[in-house]
Image (cartoon, rainbow, N blue to C red; front, side, top):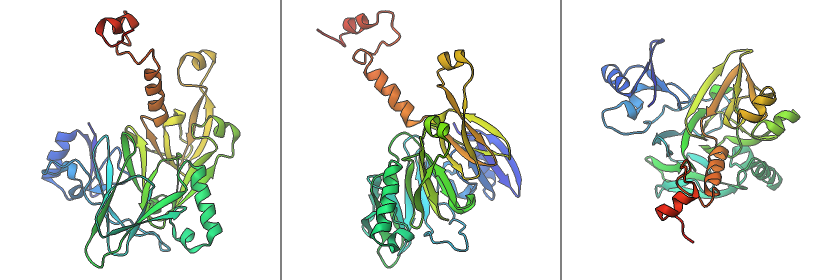
Length: 337
């Protein structure tokens, strides 16, 4: 269950469990609330999980604070679900959002869909064919497809909704880039959707050891702009704010995103015994503040590795811990000759 934190006029309260949080929200809904998985503090009245309706989703978020030179569309959103989440984006007439190809769950009829080369940002759209080709190449290097899908409310009035689903169990993280200096570094293939105007680029690891053993290789995603982006991570997500000089050791596969002010290096696990028997590999990811970092509890590579190991474990027999081993499968009728 989530641990909730409340804020009233700068005074914080928590952590509270789900029942206590619902009771507190019922008593006083005038403040703000945060839990793991939220990128920002949200108004209590906007969080449906704390309402009396029983809905498990985040109610509409307030419009993002935009930079003076902002170019991204302002979009509202709702995140539904706990383990298998999807985000529903609400568009005003003329507003657009971009999403990774193949992630759409549903859309209303007034939402027009167009497939474009590259990331669909303003700079890519206004540039020539070479600019679009470069943008598409960047996406291909970072593990995404060559194309992005742009969804635009083509009607003249009212609101229109479009939803995008996460590709595997985990958490969708909403981030307003203007709150983090206009730039975010993310793991490859973590991008889900964003307000139109956000640029999706590449970030090269310049240090050889970090590129080889940092979990994400030499290339990561760089999200630039001032609008909302939605990043997907595996399992539960925790956000940490590192102070200047503060160091955090993380499993290399558990790093989801970090602000550009955070230094990302690798550090050897320890001695020979630790390397051979700890199960943590050769290196930790070494994150040095100041800045924000987001960590995931279940990297997809770890999930896929466990599934592959289970499937290849002598036919995927059920009694993995049974003293009978393969004989137990034959006795139970799961295997035959």
